[in-house]
Length: 288
Image (cartoon, rainbow, N blue to C red; front, top):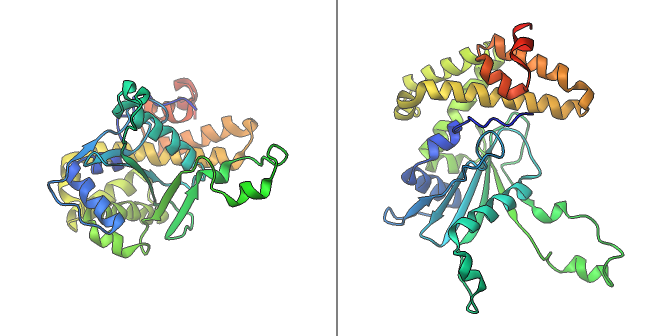
């Protein structure tokens, strides 16, 4: 798949890319109350890796805690590996390289890794994904494997995954009206789509529903056009990736791409966006 180098943001990162809203979000997730005077510095990575953005949200609380938050609409057991790469890049940016060669210990902010899931597949309210689950078996490479099994791995990373779909983690959603509003908005899109509305109409109808019911009102009024385009692109890309995963064979990629292109055309997605999602040429898309 071609990397979309022009993708500026996702609705999630646009919505939560504000220190006060991040304070509310973190307080709801962790069950704490961050005072308004505690500084929050956003340092979300912007280098191109996937969909024009390396990670969804990254911020520093009081120069003591680095929080990386990822939003996922598909289940991904590889999040700890991705988060390891992300946090390494964040540390590179906030630590003076010369300090790492000093004799005295350099104190660094502690990291925390959070994943918010709102996909269609059933998922627990809360689950922990560990980097060590991805490590290969080292039997025969150590003298006493039983000792290794009992001791913590030399490198570990734990991603805390929360299901934010309707009916899951209600106390957390109640504490963050922004997160609750986002959950309602995405849930309404899914509900409308399930009633055989096109993706484009489902999104626009969900926007109208939220505006009429005081859900994310200020945000949607300010960014309605951007939101529709972003979700059209994001959800269509998720559909494309699901097809790719389920097919599992390079042989089926071209036809899968064409099917996603057909669906995208029906949804009213611009041809240039469909190109970015599927990698198909303009001529191929226009011929469908």
